Length: 565
Image 1: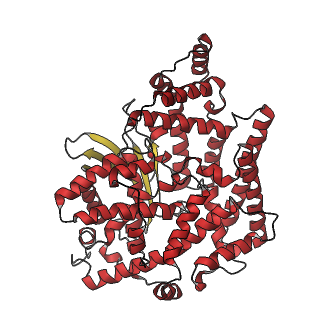
Image 2: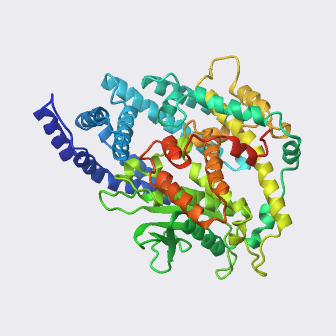
Image 3: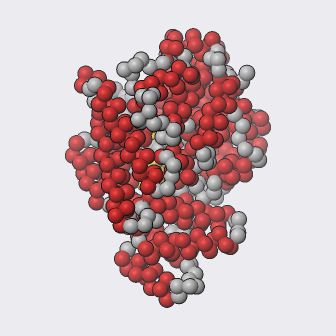
């Protein structure tokens, strides 16, 4: 890095008043320096998530402390980036490639901003770094507290004290960077660019969702049915995978094939798949699937890249998907999924598709992991919707012994259950999104209303009475602050934001008619080129308009929740 830094410095010093930076030369060299570090960090995350034994977590922590990217505080590197920004903006081109490059430059300049490069003194930069360190420490304490088993839970006061401390530190940190509050900093690179825009979305949805329909109130009181578990006998892992891959072949023109030998995974259950173009057989990407839950493995589903594909280096994406399906009792027993497991698998494969099919210059800068946070659940949520269509569900759901598909009356029950669950879930999303937004923007820690009172006020505004937390129940706050500690910042609203996009996009397929294979293929190819291949190279709202022709509407989403009054 030091050699590259000197090279850039020499170029800038040689002609300070008229320096032109070659984008491809500069960015490709910087990326080649950073790529090995990105890879080590991703391996570190993979191992900590799939094998969380104490020694692995300790080693992962050491790796996290060792690896530091220096470009954000490098004077010649940041100067070159600002020059590139100027060149691209003055060029006035709106071609896809120039937009991709400008967004890549902005991503790196945002990193420099977060490092404190643009602050006026070294003293201020050190203070900012100290605040970031304090936030990490306190959030770590909060995570440890939340992970304690029920019989070891401590007083809620300890949790609330940490939350107040985190809010204070984050507010101070954001203000040092020139933002009015922490939420404004988070929204600098989102589709929703202001707290007012998010509040309007919440208000528009609440206008249709409230008062809560009697059916959802009754559903909340009963806690829902056990239909997900009851249908386990219909969902065999290999059959579900085959159906999901065949759907992607029909829609997106890809073929997914498993490599049976020499998998080289991190556990004997891990499977390796390769993705190729159906038309010419060319290799596109590969992914690992770690399907089963086990001791020391993170107890949730997740998808992440190991290698971000880059056209300039010919790198192909390598992704991993981790699920929490119940492990078969014996090695030769079939693996059965609940309906919830199946939905989660489709959801995670939606995330994977955005990595696997991304066609960008520099994957570390323009890949799917840099998609605007509030659009990041769009594709994954759209993939879920296929499971609740009569034309598709029989493809993946067949009785393990008889081969029969799910009976029509059960299918209707399933769809009704899904609608009620989504309606109830929508109300919870309104609470979490509104609560998080208020705490990170307008909440006054020294004001008359406590954080507990704020949680209850917002919960009473949206939730069925049975779901309103008791005074000592911190569950809503825990969801928010555990997610924040895990890297999701002021992002609870993203689920509703993305679901509006996903339901609206899915309606495009539905309106064309699922049995119209030519139209399905045409629309699927358009979705691939406009959404999946673009990754974060284009603003998410522009990618959506390229696919759907206009901005997304909440109408389809509200209908799916049974709230289209």
